[in-house]
Image (cartoon, rainbow, N blue to C red; front, side, top):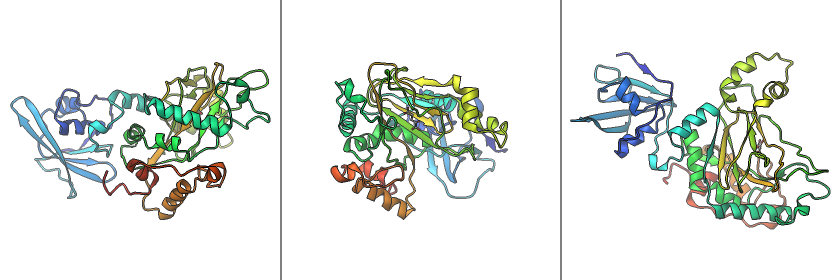
Length: 376
Ligand SMILES: O=C(O)CCC(=O)C(=O)O
């Protein structure tokens, strides 16, 4: 029986089947009810399923009088089985999460794949936003109600706020829905969270103009197949003209071919701005919404022509590197001693003045203090 290769995750997952195990299957993207029913018809059982990154399973399907009634995925470590009783599927994802943990539904995942960004609504509750927003105002020594304090003299170098270890920031990092959304895009829950900062982007006014960041990339473009994601959490409602996060939707899918057209002397960032800058789209969001974007999307902030500053917290997650002891120790030290993030590890204001953030069991794993293997 020939191997079946399936690459196009455009079909919708099971939406009517209620069996928990069947719905679990749906969250291996690309393996959908529609595919089952219309492409495979009645699949033979057992089916050998090779998930990428070396995980394999046996899928056992039991038929009831009305067709498919039960499907069970069992871990499998034996050889590939492609005999007459099984069929080999190559499914390009290795996620096996239960659907009640999923944050992004099939529509959101399709949107993500198409556009390279997704807005996760209400990723954290309003009280988390208010606490984090208050922490930003306090850190900057500004008064939310007094616009004169938003424009200090000398001016701030940009919109970034160099706070990393505040309890309110950690509360958002360790919020289960934030983790769930990143787990959906990474297809694994075993993640570490970045020590990222906040930003405050005030309205432009005479004598004060937006200084960036304009459209850019934060990763090397040497290997355009690399997968990395970034995120911004809106701490208050943010209109499109309020300094919203801006990106060129879908660029992650065409960047590889486009880079091929550039010569060695071309500067990709300048060429991208000239050719595609007009396609940049500001992404509005409500308080607590999290925008996750594919790092190959050109992205930046934008000038604020509204009345109120835009205040955000940056958060991203990536697969935990639990075997890297020195990295793990340095993360723990960064949290415990309240050092600056983004790899800088400096002793600044939070080290001198702050208290170490309290972590939940999820937060301990996202830091690296506890290992993912040991349950949760
Ligand atoms: O603040 C924003 O909206 C964009 C931030 C950004 O460009 C970045 O994090 O690299």
